[in-house]
Every structure is written in structure tokens, then in C-alpha cells.
Length: 296
Image (cartoon, rainbow, N blue to C red):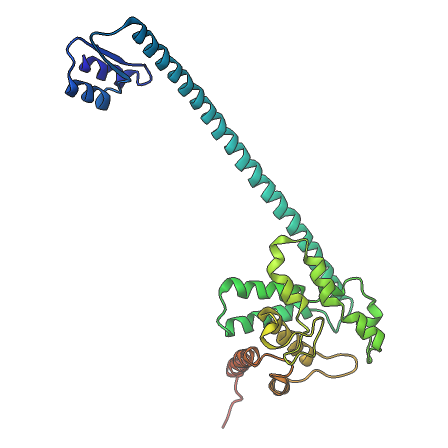
């Protein structure tokens, strides 16, 4: 009876189990279904044809179950293979993007290195941009992104006439119009790199002006993406404090005065004040670290 079926269930759970009873008992049937994996309960009297139909039906169901199990195993295997293929594809795509980005960064560094007056500019802009981002209490991921944007902000100058880029005097109108294209060109260069989608607006709009007189789109105020506003301040500060063939770089104090003067005209005042706070803190810390002259 049911005890035998329980033993069969424990040893051979996939075996079809039919209980034929000459003493119909509801409790026995329920127990067998719940504890012995019973497939059918048949009480006397039974018809031979009905019994044949029951057995045939159960055999078909068992065959379908085995087929489904094989299909499920095959599907799981294929899913595993697909996940592995997607992982490898993602890694390969990342390697291509990293190689592309490394090539761009190398070109940017090589471009700056050709002129001793601009050497290191992007690295400094990157550092200043991260300082401003931290001063604005931006999340760590955004701070790192700003650092990357700073490194790449002038990438659009690749391929431009070096004589124009390094011209010691004032640019002609035609030359200036050409140089004004570098933010757009930079955005186009980085567009194929999907992982840099969040960098593009900061590069394309870092020459926009708070009062709307910048380029390329003449954006104004809060319409300018925050990364672009930050890069604008960082880029301008480095330009102010760097020496060029035609002028001596300003001191930090002079640059601070100029940034404050241009706040709400060229710059976002929040970015300016966040930067100045950190600059003054660093200048003070540097002064305190200097050895003092001995006295009487």
C-alpha cells in the first residue's frame, strides 16, 4: 500500500505510481498523493480500457516531463553560454573604448607638449575642476568625472593649425572662428565612446558664458551644464595664472579678484566661491608650512 509507495518515492521519485485499491479510502488517497507522490488513485471496480487510458496518459505526461527537463537543461546551458559571450563582448568593447580613450589622451598630451607654454594645462584644469567639484560637495563619482573632463576638455584642438593655436598675438576673426569650433569637435571625437556620454556636455559647453555671450550655443545661466560651468572656471584660472609669450601670468590673488569680478557675467558665482575657498585654504596652508626666519 502507501508505505511501499513512500519507499518507491524516496528511491525512484520519477517513477509513475498508480494505487489500485479494492477498499476505497479517502484518507488513504489523500495521504498517498501528499506523501508518496501518487499519480493516480483507482478504486474498484475499474474498466480495463480506463486503466489502459490512464497508464497511456501518464506515460505520455512522463515523456513530456523528461523532454521538458532536457529542454530546460539545454536552455540553461545556452543561457550560460550567452551570458559568457555577452561578458566577453562587453570586455572587448571596454578594451576598444579604453584604447580609443588612451589614444585621444596621448594625442592631447602630445599637442600640449609641443608648446612649453601650454604643457600640463589639461592636467592642471583637471585638478582645479576636481577641487571645485569637492568644494560644491558633489559625489565622488562626479568629482572623478570632472577630472576626466578636465583632461579632455581641449581635445577638439587636435588637428587644428598649430601656428594658430600657439600664435603669440591676437587672433584674426577667421582664426578665432576656427578655434571656437574646438568644443564641438571635441564632443564629436568622444561621441563614439559610450562610457563618456556623461562627459560630452562638459566638453562641448565649457566656453559658454553665464550671461549668454559664450559659444558654441550661447547658453545662459543654469542652462549651461554644471560640469561645463566648473571647467570654465578651472580653465580660465589656469589661463590667468599661466605665463604666455605675450604676458606674465597673474598671481593667485590677482586671479581671485578677476574671477570675482567676472562672477555672474562669465562664471557661475557658486563655482567661483567654492574654488576660491579651497585656493585660499591651500595658500594659507602653504604659508604656514614655510620655515620662518629666525628672530633675535
